Amino acid sequence: MTSPVPCFRRLLPARTTGRHALRGLLATLMLLGACKHASSPSSERQQQSSSAGSNATGGAGFTQDLFNPKSHPEATVVHPVDPRTLSASQIKFGIAPRRDPSVDYQPGIILMENGDKAIKSVGTDGMTWTFDANAPQVSDFEVGKVVFATSRAVGRVMSLNRQGDSVSVILGPIQLTDVILNGSFEMNQAVDLNNMISYVAPDYPEPPDTSAQATTSFNRNNSPNHVDESMILFRPSHDGKWVPASMVRTYGDGRRVSYRKEGRFWSANTSYPSRIASGQAGIGFGGARLVRTGGQAFQMPGAPGVNGVHPLNIPMQPMTPPPTLGQAPVVDLQGMKAIPLAGSDGGVGVEYDYNKNGLQLRSSGYMTIRNSGIQFFLHIKNGIQDCGVRINGNVGIKLHLNASSSQAFSANMHKKIWLPIDLSIPLGGPVPLSLTFNSAFTIDTAFSAKTSILNAEGEYSFGAGIEAGYWAKAWRLNVPTHATAITDLGNSTEGISVGINSAVMGFDVRTMIGIGAFGFNTGVYAGLRFAGTVLRAPDIAFPCRQGTIEAFIDTGVGNSLPGWATDAINVFIAPFTSKRVDRAGSFLKGPSQGLFQIVTQVPPGCATPKKSGG
Image 1 (cartoon, rainbow, N blue to C red):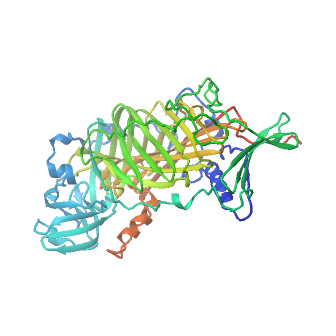
Image 2: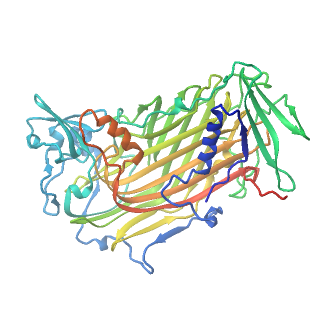
Image 3: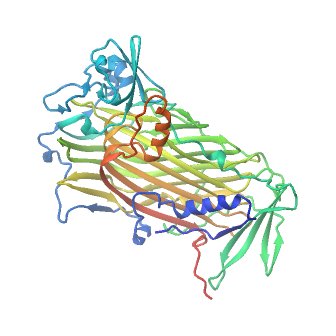
């Protein structure tokens, strides 16, 4: 289903590039869910509900609890390990595997029972591991062989360099079955999200920054009377027809003049409202109210028609890393500071701070997990036989955005980032499995005016956990299909601008039990993808705000690296090896399903085109 799209129209000269910018904005809004693997929820699912529900897929009449320990009597029980009981090398590099009668490893792999002690360092790229050349089994390293040194230092050797008493290797991604031939594992434990190890790869390859390529020009023609663009906002009339209501016109010298339609003529406006109207309820969750998201004063320096304003000031709290052992989980990526979020009182996600090209923003998104517990099972016998992961507790999602464009605004932001920070809870057992959380995010802004502000936040509770299991050669999925809005994204949207502003925030938080690190993790996973779109019409026009939230679940067995990140990695390793990372991540693909979609418009219906009555 296509999300409602505001009826904005931009009229541009044939040679200007602004037309492409608006097309990109509209395409983003219309196709927010189209890039997802899962289909959009049904129209009934879009009707908001104050109660939580669930949706189970699988064989008709199937009632067995896949996660009951009695269903896995021969499995080895694994359990969380207190990181404070680990050695310094185990915290820094991971826990080494050990041979055990309950596990058969693949023949030919290099299994290092003292692997953490053999490692000298791990590169800031997260893929290059340096070993002591004199340590046991290091002399056996060859390109193409699988090395299992620790829970994190595991993979296929793609490049090898022997120099003196050191051996450096690039370890590429593998699958669980490349390491384990036969083995069964099971866990049913409460999880303390304050008790994790963090490790960071600040130079992990990332897709290129395309923000600078999408510049917004405010002076495309030397003639001061030349009109660079005209942006017209349409609104529905009483008989259902869409008619032009207001227009913002940008001239070659950077001036912006707004107009209102009076009869057949356009009349220039001379003033702008400086504050959004409060107390308006949107469609969806009846009775929802406007919520302040940051206490901003909404002052707009330098905007035409606004007098006596004060300097733009958006107070932001310092970014605080979660309490973890290991490396401090903070990284600078393409001019952006990013940190993971974690804690038993909240959940797991990511927050980032950006200030470049006159655009400043702080955004965060995370999967909330309260009263959390993890259940897991995995049976491997010459391949995956059965597997599953269940996240117990009250699960939900939360997003937050503070964004502004300054007087020097010159470019919007378009980024895809795989956060090269893992938060991990080691699991005790013969195979050093870990419960690992990692995140990716996307951000696309479409600010059409300088000195604008756009703020919003949303929090939604599913009221139940999520689970996915592969049993008897079929996937079975039990997920919530409704959400309760604690804070509605559309109703909380606030700001000020003389143009149309929007932002799309996308997040992917993946929970995996397996081995590996930095996107090359492989194991049983359940990932929660969610995206929020915030749009606000100009203050000079018919007031309209829209917030859209969509959530999806991805499941399977395989790598956690998103496909769009593999190209950047292949470019990075090209000088060292002819080997390439395969774009295929999951070798046992589970269901990808839409959970819910919520669209809120204030006033109701203001951004939904209606059929003409004549």
